[in-house]
Image (cartoon, helix red, strand yellow):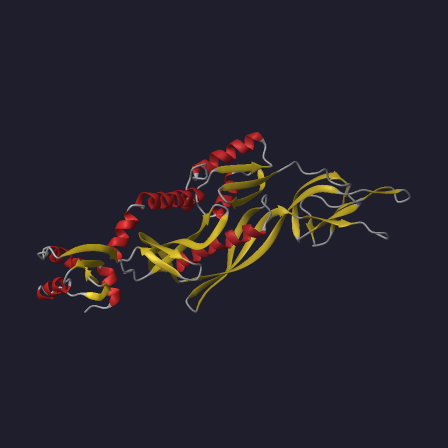
Length: 395
């Protein structure tokens, strides 16, 4: 006989035989090979027993005697429970559907608020946000990360000093700080203009103060170029010297360029994996093909599910595997030297003011050591050499 739990899965029917000699019906069942369970008497002329659901048709085909009657009084087991549950299928389906729709609506964008922006800037921001998908009705799964949204807005709107991005429930909140005209400068203290570097002066424009040098003069670092003391020796007047003085300055740079330079490029081939789970444990549900890339880079982004205003401890993660190839670029000595010159100019320009110009460059020394070309470069630069020095008592 099967175990009781197996019988519950297949289903059981309870039978009651009432009349004279009900035992004869049990004997017929035994002769037909129908197993009986839980056989017991419920009275003088009454017997109750159970059979499996699959034997229901066989027991109905057994001829009945007039002395007794057979009744089917009970049903139990999984098949009957499923049939009962089917009556409420529509109701259950409605609840599940409601929860699914509510879940989807909780993970969409329904409002975009922008504070601190003028009407013109707000219109521009909404247009930029719509272009990247941040608009009412958009799914939060498909939106870029907040850091990317913030960077995108600031890059495309130079008139903004700062943009704050925050997602609360289904609403995006943007707080904007616009650039304003600089405040009026405070009154300057009396000062000199001195040389910031050794240089040969090429041009001078003095707005206030007393010039102490002229064009083509060689000046040393710290030398006073424009004095903030005017008037006579008997009646000196202290003023903040103001002016711009350009001069030719000499600079040296040391550059090293390896002859063999490894680098990595992306081929454009990619594979995408999707995961769902907690922050520490995730289960892959899409993208089961094996990664056959010999060299690759990967990037991933995660989204935390929400239900109404609550954040759920469940994350949707997208992982992209990008195929890459490694190469080694080999330069000749001449190519490495030329590249070194370009690198030297770029590095030097980072140190100079925007209005500075490189007038001349020259290789002072060139050598090859440990697979690298080493250059010692000389540059003649035209730049602003003005620096201020406050006038103190006793000057």
